[in-house]
Image 1 (spheres, rainbow, N blue to C red):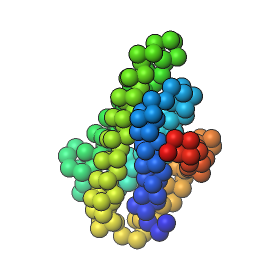
Image 2 (image 1 turned 45 degrees about the vertical axis):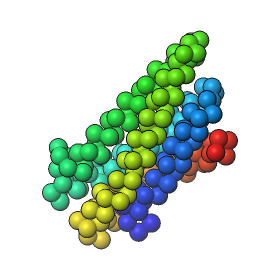
Image 3 (image 1 turned 135 degrees about the horizontal axis):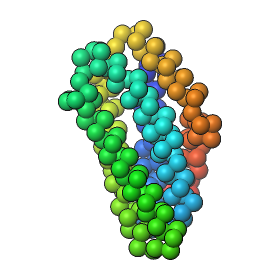
Image 4 (image 1 turned 180 degrees about the horizontal axis):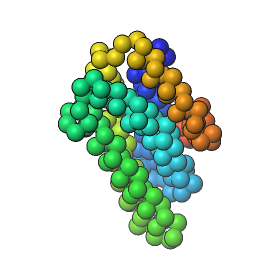
Length: 180
């Protein structure tokens, strides 16, 4: 990966695979709370913890220095959708807790939040890959791209080792083999 945006797009390949797994779990009406927990952990520690950290803490602020507002426009939309995604995850966690406590009706909440998150992220990633990242590529020079890449490497190095990029990708592939 030669650019920061290519690094982020590489993450997107696996985040999209995770969203496909989530939609398959909903469609198949899976009741495996351990796999629900794994999906939540992958979202919180990889998609949000590593990937969104690279965007929110590094990419978006540098875009801000290039004139892209965090209050309106494409960056603001992406930040808002990250919050929406976190709300879906919160709903999943609440549903899993209720389901584990014996409330079978909570499965519907889990499914709705999983599908909501998956659909949101699929659209979100399309906007990032096709619009926002292309804007970033136009705005950043090679030195800025390389600076971001080096900072991304720091984020990845500081990740929870169980859910660093390599381990998260393996976990996503294992879930895909099970459900897709």
